Amino acid sequence: MTRDATFEDGGEGAIALRAETKDDLAVIAALVQDAILPITEIAWEAKARRLALLINRFRWEDKAAAEAEKRPYERVRSLLVLSDVTHVASMGIDRSDRDVVLSVLDISFEEAEDGAGRVTLTLAGDGALAADVECLDVDLRDVERPYRAPSGHAPHHPD
Image (cartoon, rainbow, N blue to C red; front, side, top):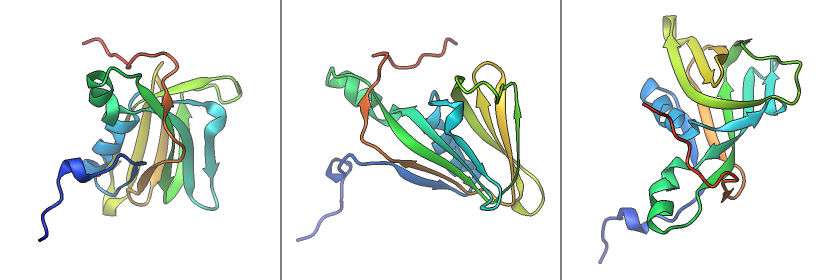
């Protein structure tokens, strides 16, 4: 006899998601909120039309389980890739300071004509990265095993 799969049947695994709509992007934005990355982990590949960021993201999807099981919070190294990028700009970031560590607050998309638009990564400290894109095509993929969050705390944003 067969049965429908349940939530409990799913094993915890690496995240691999693609955003092609604003609703899709909202899911990725929630997962990368409070991700941190050294400025050196941003790669703009103009010929490939790709902007890639190697981030250390807080595992929001595991927060409730970690609290229930009284175990440490986790982070995981993930690759955030924007494709079909035609131009990249930054604001409030000293790109010459190779020791800067950035923190992602949000990702948004402003649509223009024919599905093109601008993807903006809002960073802590009034910084931002903006990528003009021909279409919304953003991938998030965990590339390593999760590790204990060094701070031992979940990020917190006062109301």
